Amino acid sequence: MKKKIANFFKQISIFEYILTIISLIIIVVFSFAFKVGILKILFSLFGVIMLLFVSKGWIIGEFFSLAYMTIYAIISYFSHYYGEMIISIFISLPISIFTFINWIKHPKNKGEQEIKISSLSNFSMLCIITFSILLFIPFYFLLKYFNTPNLIISTLSIIASLIASLLLLFRSHYYALFFILNDIIVMTLWILLCKIDISNLMMVITFLISLVFDIYGLINWSKIKKKQAKTL
Image 1 (cartoon, rainbow, N blue to C red):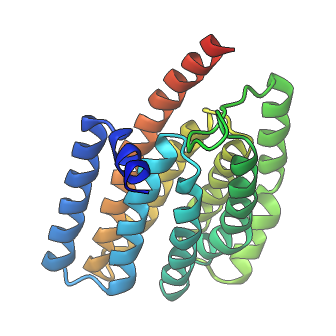
Image 2 (image 1 turned 45 degrees about the vertical axis):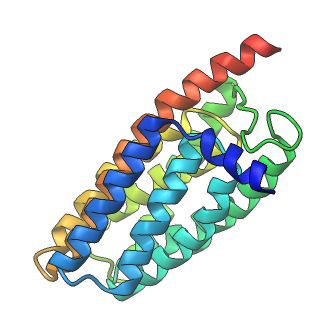
């Protein structure tokens, strides 16, 4: 058991340790500076751990994602960002459950954390993107019904998140491109709320960290995909 745990931590690179530790320090500092509530702190901490594991293509990353999405849904509800709440409860959380199951079924090798990264066809990519874009209008009017602030941006966030989540489900490294786009959109949403409550800056910082990890995830998954292709 000790060997497995030791081996687990050995697979994390020095760069990944540094990136994670710096992110955690930033979260702790901002939490004290702006007297952030416990939910936002937990969201940020779970987020960093999840992002680290997902960027490495590790199955455990999707396990942490379940807690991350649940907490985000609660925060979004109390902030009246119903679009973000809908994304979390009805899109991201269910897809994360299916992703977790799918990743367990597709490890690189039996007993390993790393998943086997797939190559989606151009047609499959087009279908996912088209399907998601077609949902823009119904989601727009749904959010409008709930008087969601920053309506257009909130709707765009749903579409970007849906595409990214579906690509992650199918183990495509292009997932990170759309999460990068979504990070930028969501940061904009929370920046607009900083005028009302400065503690929302914590959410901006969290998604800025998410942006860094997603950029790293895009690079790392591309490298992993090439390595896996060589072993076939």
